[in-house]
Structure formats: C-alpha cells, structure tokens
Amino acid sequence: MCIDCGCQQANKVAFEEIRREKENLKFRKIEVKTSILDKNNKIAETNRQWFLDHKLLVFNLMSAPGSGKTLLLEKTSTRLKDSINLGILVGDQERDFDAKRLEAAGAKVKQLNTASSCHLDAAMIRGELGEFVKPEFSHLIIENVGNLVCPASFDLGESRKVAILSTTEGEDKPSKYPLLFHEADLIVITKIDLVQYLEFSFATCVQHIRGVNAAAPILCLSAKTGQGLDAWLDYVRLGSVAN
Amino acid sequence: MHELSLATALVEQVAEIAVREKFERVVKIHLELGELSGVDRHCFEFCFPEVCKGSILEEAQLILDFVKLGRDFRIIDLDVL
Ligand SMILES: Nc1nc2c(ncn2[C@@H]2O[C@H](COP(=O)(O)OP(=O)(O)OP(=O)(O)O)[C@@H](O)[C@H]2O)c(=O)[nH]1
Ligand SMILES: [Mg+2]
Image (cartoon, rainbow over all chains, first blue to last red; front, side):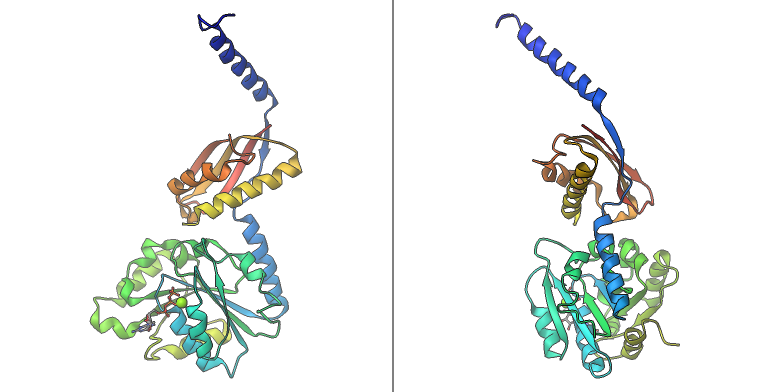
C-alpha cells in the first residue's frame, strides 16, 4: 500500500462494502403495523373511560381561528350554568384571552397553552382529569386550537366532535378540509346574522358538507343575535339533536 | 402543521420497540401514509431527518408508501441491526 496510487482509497471502499454486506446478513425485519397516533389513541381511550366512569358528556369543538367558538361558549355558559355542571377547557397556542372572556361569562374554565403545537392532544387532557376536570362535572366542553387541519387527527377521548364553520369563511371549506368535517358528529354553521352582507348560500354549503359527511346533523345559528341558539343548547344538554 | 410532533412521536415509538425487540440501529423504516391521514408528505419528509438526528433512526432509509384515500399513518416494518 502507498499514498500515491489510490490503492488505499480502493481498500477503504472495499472494506466499506464488506461491512455493509455483513450488516445486511444480520438485518432483522420487524413487523409493526401500529399507527403513529397509537400512543395518543391509547391515552384518549383512558380519558374516554374516565369520562364514562364519571358520567361526563364531553365535546371537542373545532374550527378555523376566529369562527366564533369562544363567543358561542360564552353564550352557552351564560344560558346553561344554572342547569348543568359545565367545565370548559380552552386551547390556544399562547395567551389566556379566551379563558378571561369565559370567566367573565361565569364559566368554570381553564386555559391550556400548546406553545409550539397546533392542536390539543390526549395527554394534555389527561393531565386535567381529577384536577381542573372534576368528577362531579356533568359536561365538559373543550375548545380546540383554531385550526381546520391538525385537531381532526387527535382523539381526546371526547363523546362528540363538533365542527364549526362561520358564514364568512365561505361555503366550500368542508370540501377543502375534509377530514375535520368528515369526523364531526355535529356541524354548526355560525354567524348567520352576517349572511345579508355576504354571498353565502346555505344550499351550496350543505352540499359541500354532505360530500364529506352524509349523516351529521347541521345546526345554523348566530352566537351574536342568539338566533338558532336553543337547538345548540339542547344538543349540549343531551348530546344529540332534540326532535 | 403537526408533522414535526408526529415525527417526534414516531422516533419515540421506535425507541420503545427497540427496547422490547432489543436492537440498536434502524437501517430502513417503511411507513404507510394515507391521503386522508391529515399528514402532509413533503412536510413530513422535511421534518423526519431533523428529528432522527442523534437517535437510533439517524442513518435509517425512509420508505413512504402513499395510499390514495387511506386514513392511516403507520409503521409497516423496520429493518434493524
Ligand atoms: N356577527 C357575528 N360575529 C360573531 C359571531 N360569533 C363570533 N363572532 C365574532 O367573531 C370574532 C371571533 O370570535 P371568537 O369567539 O373569538 O372566535 P374563536 O373561534 O374562539 O377564535 P380562536 O379561539 O382565536 O380560534 C369575534 O369578534 C366575535 O365577536 C356571530 O355569530 N355573529
Ligand atoms: Mg377562542
């Protein structure tokens, strides 16, 4: 071997090949086939069991930022706080503005900040069970981080997923963000008081919803004027649409 | 948007399997990514190598099967040493 002709380099390549071949022989294949969300799903199942054991009806509210989740919950809290034992968990990346608003409406509320994350996950909810979330609550509403994409993938252990769409977002969002609307047990179209200023067609919107979700009931309301609010309050109380 | 946290969850999951199955290094990781899983493929492929740095997945080759209308995002199998 010398340093001039490149034989050293050649040897290095040969050694590397031999090492690879040896390693190849030792490869083991391990079948896994579990979902990457498996860990979250398992925690969600334990949350779900806790909610069942303590007879809590739990809602996971999801929508784009600013659709009106918090205003709807302010009204919900004001109207229901004397008839049900309601707790509210509210998720945002930063700050506690929403919790302050809900507190002012008389709600039992706790703010969760997700920092770098764009959604709530099951472990964050688990951390509140028996702490903020009391066994004697009859209802828990979780306001998820405003986002039409990520929250849909993370089961929290809730009894009902609620997707909210405001008229100012346009009729086509269910087709553009199918997963959230597909998974929803209830779809709320809100800010209907603004329709007079918009080009918004309920028929077109329902078509987009039905394209991704054939069965979920649809409620139309305005959290601002209170129109259609009663049907929503019944849904919260009962967990289903009253006939 | 949550591809980074999924990539992190993936590395954690593989680390748990490594303890159970007693291996030290992953040579190849084979994943299935469903179109409806809510995971953006390009974003995930961008995050994955970053998250793998310093882990047993550092030198692993990533194989992604994209499944039209699929809902799952899961590990199919691992080639390990
Ligand atoms: N006109 C009208 N405005 C509404 C209605 N609901 C909410 N808003 C207004 O919409 C804005 C956003 O409402 P929020 O309740 O903060 O929305 P959010 O979904 O909680 O927002 P994030 O938590 O940031 O995702 C506020 O200015 C509300 O007053 C409604 O039914 N009609
Ligand atoms: Mg809010």
